Length: 565
Image (cartoon, rainbow, N blue to C red; front, side, top):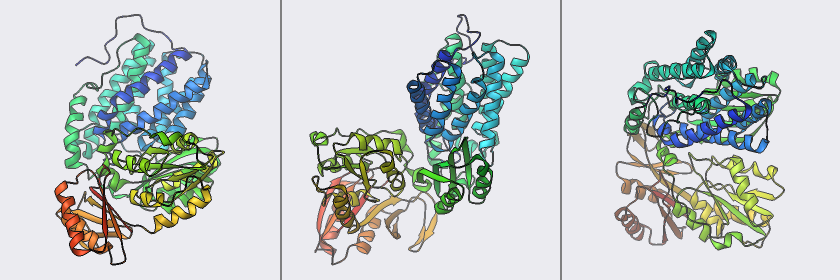
């Protein structure tokens, strides 16, 4: 395994110019994209949801795009782009902390014309300070520890009058020592046999600096650094399944809530105090009236109301962490999506944008007349910008959005204010509701007419889903053991059984009545032809009044989705 601090042998830069800083950010973005899956596999803290690499990579993509769009040629301009791009593009807990690290560095670098060794060390020190300030309850053994130790290493070298290359090498070496020690600071990491995911991703920033300073190669995706980090990533793929449902109780908090908050800076201290009593994993970063806020909590309403008390929250995103833990591998394993059909470009009075997970589900939406499908689901909540892009590309001046997930409804409702087009949201919370709503869709009617008809059609659907328990628990039906199959309806869990077919038929028994006429079965990952046949036979015997429609959706996490009309 190559030494990551080994010089390339060529002449090293004594200072970095603005164009060099741009090159660093692009190399960092490319490095995170290449290492995304490996970092995801290390992710077991604060929630074992396997998305740290994805969130960090998306945050840096936003930074790179902001830099490209700014056209800046001096350090002040480049740093402004880094700060704004990281704030607006931050995803998840790790992305928000990373944005604060980049903003801290930018605060120092913007005051200079070039970056020399002392300036770089000062920038890392400020980055560490802001990262700790952003987190309500700092936890050692995380990305915070790695940035702090890296900053200390660079400061020590700078005080000894070392040149830029040596200062960066010292910071990287200290960071690797800190990263290797993270399992000794967080038991959940040691139990899973991994080092901290966020810290692993952060060190790629220092690799990117050295890549620009002296031309050394960036670490390849199979080699995340010294001390067996790559091997630990492989271990994590298995250990994640064995240990990923714990985490020192942190995962007991059900929801991740994120939003931008427009509020006076003077109100933020009080806002943080209120949040401290609501949840954990609290990160609030920003300034000058705009803040990126992140919390894990059980009470979504209280988290948002605290923001309303001091300002205006927008782009609210809510993720169910319980479902996210189980679905994490689908964040890493991208599915091949169907191509848009020819009708997607045909002009209509009202166009449809639908959110979908699973190639089969996407194909069904296209077949029902949808013009644009945005890939997304429980752990892949699309941003407002992604939905806006689809709306702008839709071939109509009036557009309806089908979010098809309760956590995406709030984001979808932000789009209308961001575009000159007329946008309405049919508040569908699942694929079955989305399919049913489209039966009332008239492409030549206006948005309000379609919205009223499609909402009624969606409301007429009784939705059910079958998924697997990720931990021991209990419900009104009875005790739940990890691995049991759960039949879930809008009002909660309706069946629990060790076998998939039993949970599914019990759910159908509870939901399908003599008044119903159609049961739509959507097969997903984990379904089987034998189980599907069993369900159809059960319906023929016990609910002979209904017709059965079968579709292969390919959706993750839920082997079966039911739509009952």
